[in-house]
Length: 421
Image 1 (cartoon, rainbow, N blue to C red):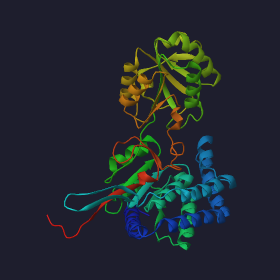
Image 2: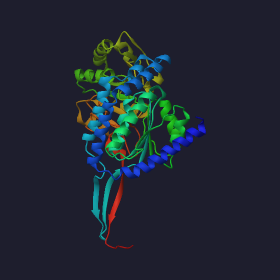
Image 3: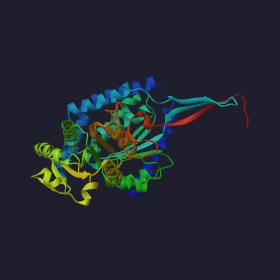
Image 4: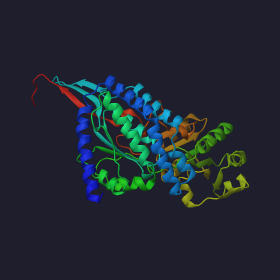
């Protein structure tokens, strides 16, 4: 298809999604949950065809020379597919935020005001690599009464199409409106631009992927975008920190899963504990295979294996077993460094002093700020949301891990008895 044909096809998908969104608002919680369970059953029933589609993607990935890590992210097997259908069933079990009364009050003139959660409408999700994002995004958006337009990466196109077809077909048998879940079958880069410009049919777009993808969507989109660019996450070790606990938290934050957005990238250590703390820290980091990039104060105290940090290190999201380490003179300097170099994602303070924790948590301008806990806890599941669509570093509408409530808007219902102004 040429570009004009792709644009026309995407516009038609948008028109159908808008029509579906008007039908979705009519569904109650019990019916939505029954539809989700039917979707999960259909994924199980189509195991053979979904795995066959995934095999095509894996063959293409090897021919293109994708890394082993990327291929692992693409790979589906019976166990992973069962986990995908189980995740859809888990969404069915979550409380439904749609219709929740957020506030209510009566004005002096007798008008009764009610603020309620409602679906956003049509949500576009642009993502890369992992086929499970297809089902995660679609099921979460559907639970909140939203129609979904999905655009996955070319490397997973066969898997994504097979999963989206299973969701729509299984759901339709239980009452899902037609075209509630659509996956854009075009891998041309122009399809991202056409989707992002379709504000006449789409209310929100959420890009999930690398910085290049997100910048492309932000620069093109004509509707609101919820995203995060980087996860340059920090931990500050204060003078009163329990040092054994600090090493445990640092190791978990850096090494439990280094390639994710809530992994630790920069460690700040107060100068008053540097001489005592750095040798212990270095031993633990070397044992964990972490490369240390440190400032001039830390270098001699960390010993072998540490290399000088550059200015660029303070603003780098490594997504690898690399940690930049800086010595700071005070809590104030730590806060200043984080607010200057950080990405407003996740930052933590390790201290036994309640006043230090309170100041840090108040002044650090990030979506999630922790006290005596790993940065890895910035996660919808860990927050008790049950599932998440992503993590936002924006300040409007959604910030931090996005659960079902963040996939809703709200409206005001005003009841009167003939009042006029």
